[in-house]
Length: 253
Image (cartoon, rainbow, N blue to C red; front, side):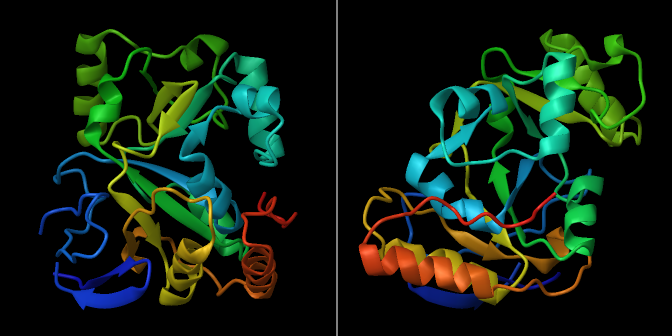
């Protein structure tokens, strides 16, 4: 079994491959199974740029592109995704994947853009208004192919088909907003350096809940080590003023 790390706000510790940690227990360490294969218990995943994580922890959850725009928050969604989602009527949904490694994440890693993975429990698929999308919106399909599938029986059938190898780009759509607590067991980083950068924000006032952070390189496609000097400068600025500042404008798409 592969080994991984669990990083809590001030401590990094090696642990072997068991049950997931609870967000309320930030000081304990658990062995963690490597999720992502179709034979393991289902989890959902959301990839986000590393420099957006502090603001994510400050706000406590994810917002759809439409709600980000309406709230005027300093988070800039991927321009290509914004255009597609508005055109297809999906701008008020948050996109999750049933597997951590996706073509989107592979593209960002290959281009040296630092990203993290947010893990979500399978229970999010039962939230009101959720539905499955058979294809990623980058696919060339008829508009009808991008209608969310919401009936429980049809959702179960799609998951079964996904486990059998069909619909490899299957996505879960969550309407509006998705809080980290109680649905996220933690964040996943590709390296100890990136995980330690996130952990340092525990010293910044305003973040009321800090999740466990896992170093799980096996959940990430290969890619060059990103330049984290802008991230270090941003962390220093936040620590200096004692607040989470608007994220730096870094390329990520």
